[in-house]
Amino acid sequence: MSVVVLTQYNGAILGPISKVLGLIMNGIFNFLYMIGIPNIGLSIILFTIVIYLALLPLTIRQQKFSKLSAKMNPEIQAIQKKYKDKKNDQQAMMMMNEETKAVYAKYGTSPTGSCMFLIIQMPILFALYRVIDNIPAYVSKVKDLFFPFVTEFINKTGALDFIKNPENFSNVQRYSKMVESESFTLSNPEYVSNTVIDILYKSSTSEWYNIFAQGNFPDLKELITNAQGTGAYDLFCKYNDFLGINIANSPSYIIKDAWASHSFGLIIGAILVPVLAAVTQWLNVKLQPQTNTPSSGNDQQDAMAQSMKTMNIMMPLTSAFFCFSLPVGMGIYWIAGAIVRSIQQIAINKYLDKEDIDEMIAKNVEKMKKKQKKGQSKTAALMEKYAGMSTKSINDEAAKKSVSMREKAGISSSDSKNNTVSSNTGSKNIKAGSIAEKANLVKKYNEN
Image (cartoon, rainbow, N blue to C red; front, side, top):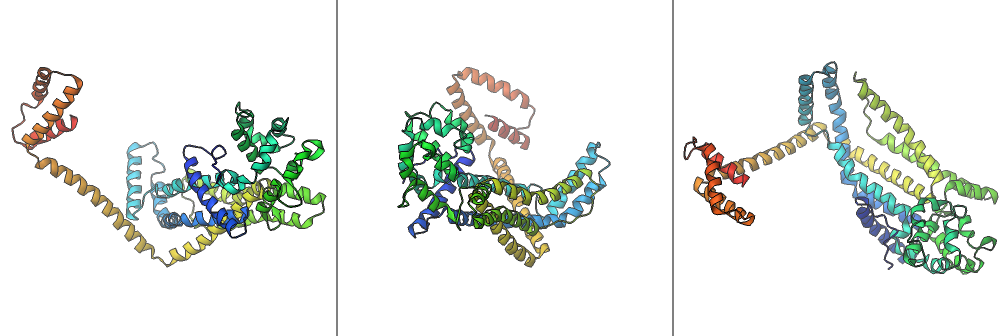
């Protein structure tokens, strides 16, 4: 198995998550390879299903919060309406916050409930995109198919200048920092190989053919494509073929190329990708819990509600646009993700419809009470521990700790004695053996 380092995403947060997801993707592709169907498109679909199933518990909790929000919103809006003309009154705003907190406590949830689920999910979904966007970095067998050709190619005279030319490879601009780096030289073949593989993986059919066309590097044609189907591009197309479409190409490129060759079947397939992306995204939005609430009287909140409606309309259109211009592989991920989420949403809706909302609230409130009781019991135990300690044991332990600290700091015992006397002057009026004295000793103990 090849060791992949440079082409992986190395961000502080998404980098480690991407590596874990990459191991899953690599395992899925190796399994398909083992049973004789090594296919990147199918791997992306299975990979997306696995990840969304793993996120299912979080999705259920998020939907439960949405259902509770629909029930809470009228009460919260009533509170906001009550104080809407008192925004400059600090006391009124504090009272509004207290009343809002009381509503959340009544339903056994918190204002940050939904945010927490999103905070956990978002890095995983962004890392998922990183893996799918650069399959060779994470799937060893896909990267291996490039090496015989790339090793030969980079050692050809003028090859590095050829690969850096945007007229030959349009996506090279995405890797401008890498190709302009001082490391992009033959003295660093691993770095160069990884960069060239990144560029080739996202290149169109015509850009691959540019390598040996027009007399550029004619002797490399056999390594790229041959009658035996063992060339780098041949295997690349085999792995990327999904229902007759090369998923490394974008629908816009496929339509343009297929129109020139009168391959109208490919045109229909290419058009279906952005259309299905938009339709599945629209379906996913429609299945989400909808909160139909009247105007709250709060201009800011009403504006946010209107923005959400606009976004729900724009999301399917945005999906269609991106899936038209990006490689089909990204479109497959987009469509598969929307379908999986829609199926999950249907199942979750049925599950939540069977649940009694009042019972759900009662369970949440009980959980909150247990958390509060647990926190209170810890505080009480700590107070009891300090209250039960004798002044002598506290004093001795504090003195030992103080001496040890002073010895480390190089302070003499006479300085320590003077310091002790001065520190006690403030408490000379406290009655010996009283609670106040114990509290004072605890305070000094903590300070030391």
